[in-house]
Image (cartoon, rainbow, N blue to C red):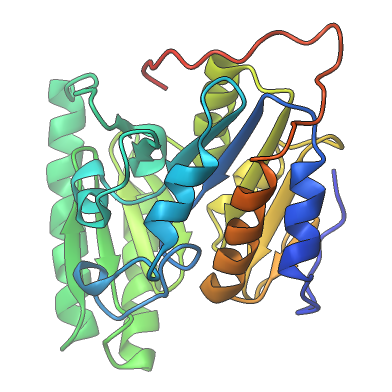
Length: 278
């Protein structure tokens, strides 16, 4: 397991891009969205990609050479506002959803559990006060308190988390000023494993900024690159300051992959770009 990196010493985005460009291909590059490609805002509906980022992602995706995916805690419907290019694989709800795939319907037990969790989240929002809101996903519900009073918001998150953890079958994910209550288990580490099993890359890059991304970082090995964006203790090997730095890295990387790719190991399997359910 890599050592945790809790400092805010950031890497040069161009140097990180050069390191990624030197990796053995086929290459899988996976990004979280909010806080990575789009600056954090008070309400998710107001979030926007930095200008030019969508085009850079599409430029980076080169068939049979570099595959690009978004792996987000947002629902697929919530990710639709970013209008990602069809060449980009979009995975939402920590792996419970995939663009173009309806996925498995909730069981009666999961629907009942989700209804109980919705009540907890709504009560948490009421306790947090003005600005707090509830986000609904197919298999989970999220309490957002970023715009609320900080003290009341933190107390509401803690109370909601404790109450949800007491319900059999419920899974709780912490994030930045949010708590997600899940009726169906999912996490970014498992979702990344599924993407890698499908695409069979020689090397993988994962870029994230929040607590759930740590599970993905821990799945990566010495031939991969893990990148934490912003503050926070992390198992990632690299750190970029903010979405602007990510965009600088992405622009340089997209330019680099147009050059002859690093030759894959002789015994490597070819990339698999067939879409499937994670």
